[in-house]
Length: 506
Image (tube, rainbow, N blue to C red; front, side, top):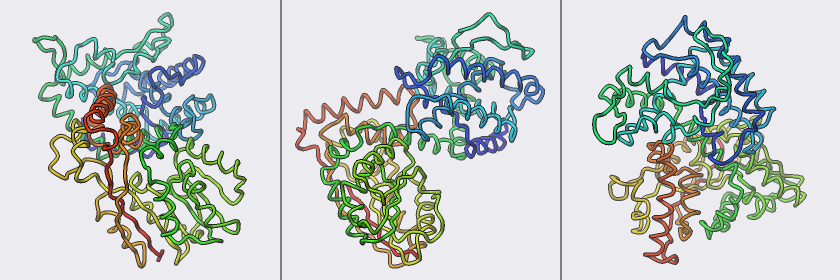
């Protein structure tokens, strides 16, 4: 494989409107696709594969990988379905895929193929799926062949997909095998044939990585990091979890007993006054906006435009707006890195505990663009987990092993990162630190929010294949329950360091 060419293809994918993220539509027992939609997507995948297969075989970019028509159809089906789930989830804020988004997805996929090529698409799919295949074997050491073929450890959605008709070697659809479940046998065969996996002779009998397989796995890991595919995948996972977190307000109350005070202090510290036109970033369900007083601070003569990338959060925030008849407040789905507003529009920009989930450099530059010269910007955010108390180290040991004392492997910024960026954007910037109490006495809520939803420990969790990740979440809940039993619920408190920033837009 030409790795530079592979990087170019993955970068094309990362900036396109399609995603290869089947876990978005596969939620175990959750039914996200109706039978009608499954058939609809399958037939679209058949049509697209038939349409492009002959030409693709003639311009094969990966001669070392035996790509069958069935594998090509699976690649198209997974991509169509995950893109439809992505659009439905992050545009409409619902788990259930809509017919409208299936139609939109087909159009977006056609556009990608016209602008790139079907062969480039398949190359991107193979790079990602080969990494996932090798990742599972690297993690477990040995994987039984039938377990690998079913994909239950690393690609469990495979068994849910149906061929509903097979494409022959000449590219024509062969009827008569309707409803055949897909599996990974063709991918396993290719990995064995290319010397990336071998069948061991020990017990249990299974497949394991060869030296070439390990080198390829490490090269793919670097490639997916460089192309930002991993970064985008983590963001998709986080946004999907947040948009479907129905009890967000209750969880925040449980984990952050002083969270209301934190938000109210931010409003006062930023200097929000009546009559201001305010932009709120990362508004979530509108707790800062309504419960904690931002709307009251600007008064009826002011206005608030609040943005968040998660439509499910925005829907709950807008429900509050309608109930309170707050006509001077509007909620808009947008990313803080790319604000849909004109230059010099706002008197103030504010946001509570959101910046650590974003590209902070892009966010601060966008905030400076849409705010008027002399406008105020204010935010606070948690800093990286530092010196952990004993209960925390014991609880989260499986994802923190090997760290030096006071070390961390979370996504949170250190003391210097954001101030260094802010210096180029603000005049008279003020930076302060505070200690915020976190209540860990409910292990299920703590693991659910910090590990699964907020994905704070993105680095160690992303190092786990799919099933191992689910198992780790379950293990951490059980470890938390054991820690609570040992230390007592009343002692599962810690004070987390927050950084505060206030600056005047240049």
